[in-house]
Amino acid sequence: MPVFLVFAACAFASGFALRLVDPIVLPVALHFGVAPSAAAMLNTAYALPYAIAQPFLGPLGDRFGKARCIQVCVAGLAVMLAAGAFATSFALLLGTRIVAGIFAGGLIPLVLAGLGDTYAMSERQVMIGRMLFAIIAGQMLGSVVSGFANVAFGWHSALIVAAGIGAVAAFIAWRAMPAEAARANTAGSGSFRALYGRVFANPKAAWLYGAVMFEGALFYGLFPFMGELLLATTERGTRAISIETGLVLGAFGIGGLLYAASVRRLIRLFGVRRMCFIGSSGAALCYVGLAFIPFWWIDAAVMFLAGLTFYMLHNSMQTEATELAPSARGSAVALFACGFFAGQGIGPLVTGAMLHTAGPRGALLAIAAALVVLGHVVVRKVIDRRVPA
Image (cartoon, rainbow, N blue to C red; front, side, top):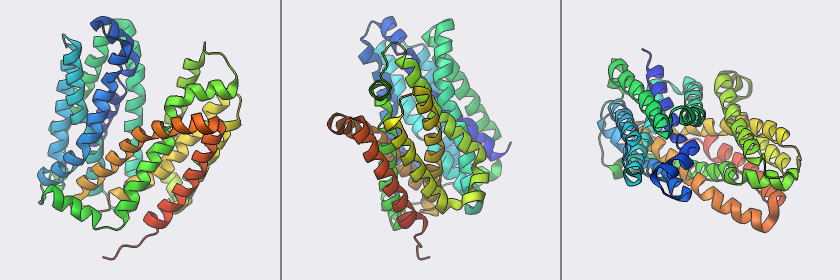
């Protein structure tokens, strides 16, 4: 089996588990007799370890082999998802989500680093872009399948389905990992300090990690407030706002899928440098549109374009992360992912403060201006920057 398909199976399993709990928070709360706010902590219990584990698992992949670490992580994820399905208490379920988040946090960064080991720079952005299709599809299907499984068989079944997907991915990773991929990802040397020292020896590193943190904050900081924004700008009641909010946010992911399906054509048409400018400026225009458009269905179309332009910028930055330090590629990509998730955590705090001080339009216009600046910084300090050999 081609190494890309092996990596894609693992990335899909990780993405599927990420948004799995969202639709079953209320059934879980009812089953264990806890408050919905407590049940919602299942998301935090997964996402926080997911982010924190990445800077540790990346160097482990560099030291002991990325392929082997991917195999262990996907197997551990499947086991923890299955254990959660049969948890006899809420505390036990919470514990399985914490450990599952740790294992899942090692998958996507190491998969991207593995692609960096496998493909030359000229082909790498296309392959990473295509890998995004597996990741985004997993995230979108995780929520959808979880909701339907809960209605049909109860909340346990959602975790059982996810465990089954994880088990299939683990079987593929252990049985079908090409020998050349395992050899290409065999152990390196160096302590955590030495590996990260190699990463930050590249003068692009600090700019790239700062940029991806701001990117995560600017793009995703608005998401928790989308329902509030739609109420403020469309002058509607609250009856259907949750459905409309879900459709608007879902359109962002669909835009990402379009990017993943057309990445080669976009690179050929625009080149990486112009894609970064188009991505940041196009997303800025989308956020300006959100400030003034009074129809939710047009907002959904705008968010579709925002998803497309976001990945034009983000995928270019991801590819640069795989080349910061070829001898410590797992560490470099893991720290990139950690910065991105940290930005997503900081973003709602900053965006919420802006919404309540400057209002929806003021906040959106400020975000749009910051996105334009971000694109120029990425191009000048990362894409165009020449590093001495």
